[in-house]
Length: 240
Image (cartoon, rainbow, N blue to C red; front, side, top):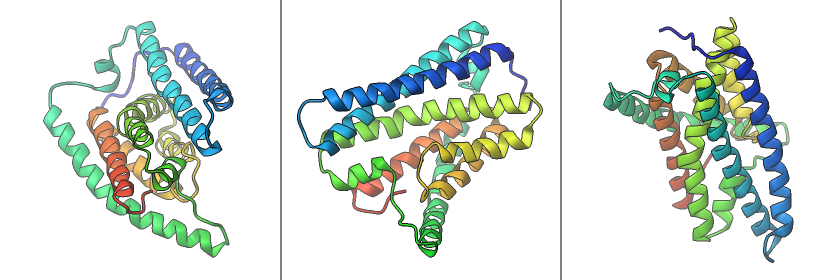
């Protein structure tokens, strides 16, 4: 599989800088939104401020990536293998991957909880999961579902697999690309209990993308994985 993408190093570094600036701006927006949000308890204000910030990063990030592709005269299809040819196979691979990884991730999460208790750390679920578990508010659930099942899989797969993994491979660091992006992906979720399961998930997604050359499979797997976790929590299970 040929992994040389026709984007310039300079434009890629500009994109990285813009994404970091976007994340910083989203953080400021979150702080401002929490202060300006209509009266309510602190948890409600914090949730909606975080939701606004997340949407800004994901949607704004995709806009910046579209600009990056235009700068390099690349289509989404050429850059990330979003082809109609073999679409059914890619979707099927994504579905099978999600099913297999979900069971494995539950086992790794239980292992992580055991290890954390062994060193006297208290396991805590991700913030979105805590929100679903603590609040029956349908609006919150719809927001979490929208971001976790639709926006996050597209944005995160384009960034971690489509851009970072490929850029590091092109720079001559295939091992760093493979393992570094997996660890970074897990670390960005800022949760110790899910770190090991998410590293494993990212490794599988890396393999899937490198084998197929298309982000359709990883995006499908990511969306189904998040969706399964979402409904697991909503229906009363213990999500990751």
